Structure formats: C-alpha cells, structure tokens
Image (cartoon, rainbow, N blue to C red; front, side):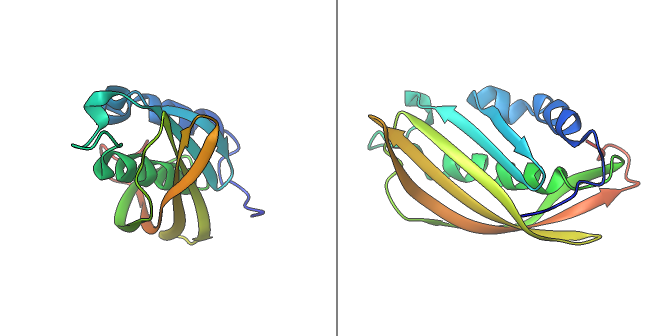
Length: 150
C-alpha cells in the first residue's frame, strides 16, 4: 500500500475514536489491527447477531465492514479530520456461518476530500476462513464541522 499517514499519532487516534463507537461496543466488535490505510475488526458470534438460519446477519457483516473501511481511511486523515461514509456497496458471496467474523478495510486511493476503500469480510469456523463478502466504499474527510472530528 505504501500510504503515509498525515498524523503520526494515527494509531492512537484511530483506537480512541473506535472506543467511542457505541454501535461497535454494543455488538462486541474488537479493533484488532491498525496500519496506515488498513484496519481489521473482528466479532465473535452470538445468537443475537444472527438471522433466522443461524448465520451472522448481513446487516452485521455490512456494519463491521463499513466501520473497518471508515477507519482504514481515517488512519490517513489529518488529526483535525473526522470521517463519514458517503456510499458503500457490499456483495454477499457466502453464508456468514462462523464462530467469528472478520472485516478488513483497505484504502485504494486517498484524496484531499474523498477516499475509496475496498471492504472484505470473512467468517471463521473450526479453523477455516471463508470470504463471505466484498465491497467498495467512498469516505469523506470532514474538517471544521463541530461534532465530527474523531
């Protein structure tokens, strides 16, 4: 990837922002890896995260994928910038039947205002990892807006 973060404290800032996310805390999601332009989030399966067949619900997979991409972009933003998703599309490729879900966000291209990320989601079951979703996302770096910094 070769991205250079605008903020040398990008990892600390990213982890602090993630810790403020009520939705991620509610789901039990964990911010596992933070690198320039790349973030990985994991989530242990619980029945309340499932759809009617006992798989992770597509909305749950989409939520952690969107968040992973958002924070991947955020790692490259200046210290005074917040992040919001402009758009994302996700293709569900396999049933999310697993003990743990993993979402990976990777920056494809970053600009002054807009950043585009690749989203990938996997499920792990009995030591086997299955790629269950892939997508693309556009983010906006928000500067100078009260309440949207981190």
